[in-house]
Amino acid sequence: MNPITALVTGADHVTGLGSARALQAAGARVLGLARRPGAPICQSRAWDSIQQIEDSDPQAFVDRVLGTAASIDGRVFLLPTADDHVAWLAEAHGSLPDNTRMAVPMPETVSLLLEKTLFVEWATKEGFPIPRFAVVRSEAELASALEGFPLPALLKPTVRTRAWQRLSPLRKILRIETTDELEAVSFDLFDAVPSYVLTEWIEGTDADVLFCLAYLDEKSEIVASFTGRKLLQYPPLTGSTAICTDIPDSALTALAADVLGAAGCTGLASLEVKRSVSDGRYLITEPTVGRPNMQSAASTAAGLNLHGIAMRDVWDEDWTDLVRPRKRIVWVEEMALFDVVTTRERPRLPYGLLFRELLAARRVKGARLGFCDLDLIDAMVKGRLTSSRPPPGEGL
Image (cartoon, rainbow, N blue to C red):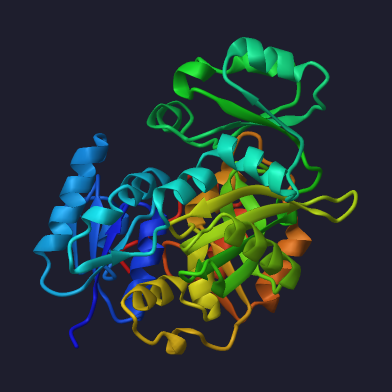
């Protein structure tokens, strides 16, 4: 039987690169769709080819993706790697070409898990552990909600719109220490996003953030999962993963199974939590639905190829060879780490924790280089590399 062609959107992002490597390792021919096909990430040998695609118009994007899939000879596995791509393609379930399958839930499930307003209200009703929150849809509602709300607090856009990504390219959420800080925001909050979720700050560090990556079958049951722990984020405390490691956690896996199962989720998904330092409880910070995460590559490095499992399972192929004995790993997003250690507001880094994990790991993997240069990591963490960014290395 001919190999499956994996059609991956967002090929010019590090999540797309990690997906391409995992799918190639699972035997696929990998075709990427990217807004910036000239990006260094797109030069990786993991890609069989790259095509340019615009994604400013949802319907035009879906038509182009499905047209590309239909033009491919043989079976196609369609993998979106961005939230908006997931939302748009979920609506196309009934329009997929006969040769194409994907691991994306139905639109109602995608909306429930993707839109923070819907999710926090649903999760609270279901009794899942959610931090105190308030939904705000105007400046007046935000001002009212902040009265008596414990600070610091987090202000999360319900959906990270294109306007938000343009105006706040680094920060996924805003951490509010005092109400005066909102006056310093350089753009109109409600021009960027129509609504926000204001949530209480959970005391702890980046190392108190944990995640469960999963693949769920048609019965919304987890058939393969990977749990990990962030060690460092960029921006610190509120950002994306810079360094993470694997950590077996049956309690987190059980919570993810309960939440994702109750939501009727199928396919690729994940659940992120923060462990409260006051009582050790896991409080849900956000789910991901229909796509891999940036740190999903850590799962592949540790021996569990969730991307490949999803691809083979939707095509009814055996995937048991993609589950290997678990290896201790540390995964590093090199550019994010560089940004952490060179930012003007350089945080206090957990040197002891980082180096204990690095030394204990059997495998240290880089998101971009595909391997980890420990001398480079050591130089960055100790602040000796401050004048130029490390080599991207995406072509390896």
